[in-house]
Structure formats: structure tokens, C-alpha cells
Image (tube, rainbow, N blue to C red; front, top):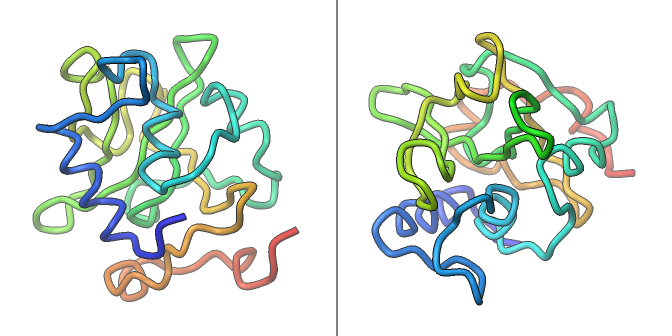
Length: 160
């Protein structure tokens, strides 16, 4: 797993112009969960966003407005497809909240998008987590997150 949020965001930025989807695929088409986990250099832990969200223990599932989602968090949308959709929270200019996702602006490509993706969420809130089967993502070690995003009390304890 990557150690820094900035390394994950840099990897995602690089995917916009120089994609490296998992072989034998040539694009990221329908690989949102793969892109999300690979951004953190993680092995496969769910074959779809819906299954990924279902694996997250309830106490580590969050449903908040975009301004409370830390950069680097796994985000999930459960509308409009049987598989759902996964993306990674990022940072935008002037503290505008963005996400990195596939199949949103360009089919099979990684792009920046609004953090609360209209096609996969039905309101202004976002489902997100810092939990993975491999341990918590180090979101609050990031200087921006530490300063601007309050850490939910549930993450102050130890992983299950």
C-alpha cells in the first residue's frame, strides 16, 4: 500500500494522460474498482464497487457532504448499475473537492470529476471509507487532510 496520499493523487494524475490499466486490458473501461485499489497499490479485494462497499464494516462506512471527505478516500456510488461505481477523492484548486474516476468524461479513461458524481449518487452526499482489508488508508497523515478534515472518532481506534 502506498504510504502517502500525495503519491496516490500523483499516480492518478499520471493515469489521465498515460494510462496503465491491468493487462491484458488496454483501457480502464468498467474497471473503476481496479483503478481505485491500484491507486493505493493494493491487491484485489472486491470485483465491483457494490461488493467493495459491502465488505466495509458498517462502523467504517461514512455518508457525508464532499467537504468532509478526505483526499485519497475510497468513494462509492450504488445507483444506476448492478456493480455500482468506485472512485478516489482528490483535491481541486481553491479547496474545491474533486474525485478521480473512470468512464465519466471519457470512456475507458481516468479523469477528474465532481466528488459527488451525479450519475452514481442521488444527492449531495458521498459514501466513503478509509478502511481496506489491508488496513486503514493513511489519510490523516496528509497535511491537507490533517488541517481541514476532522478525523471520525471510529478511526482513532484500531482496525478490526
